[in-house]
Image 1 (cartoon, helix red, strand yellow):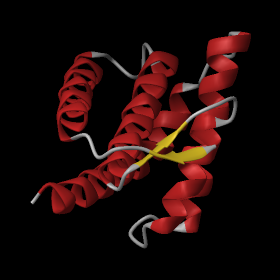
Image 2 (spheres, one colour):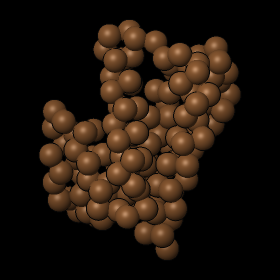
Image 3 (cartoon, one colour):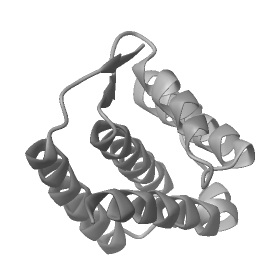
Image 4 (cartoon, one colour):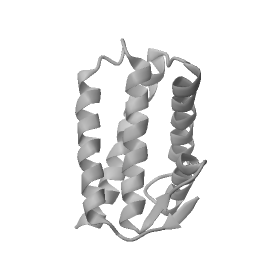
Length: 133
C-alpha cells in the first residue's frame, strides 16, 4: 500500500548515504563468485532509490506487498518504462527466492543483466537529483 507521508529531506539524505555504502560494497564483490549476494545488493539499491524517490514526492510504501507496490508506483515516473518495471519485479522475485528459499542466482544472470540494472540505478538517481535541486 502507498501512503502519503510528510516530506523528509533528512531521511532521504540518510537513505542515499546507505545506498552509497551498498554501491561501494557491491563493487568490492566478485559477481562471478557471489552472484546471488551481488544481485540481492543490486535489488536493495534499486528498492531504496525507489523509496527515496517517492519519499521526495511525499509517499511511502508499507504493508505486506510494500516492495511490489513500490515498484508499481514507479509507473508515475515516465523515465522508468513498463519493461524496466517488469524487470525490477523479476529482480524482486529472484531476491525473495534467494532470501526465503535459498535459491541461488547463476552468474550468467548478472552477466546478461548487469548493464540493465546499472541503467535503472542511473535513471533513479537522475530522477532523485532533479528533485533535490
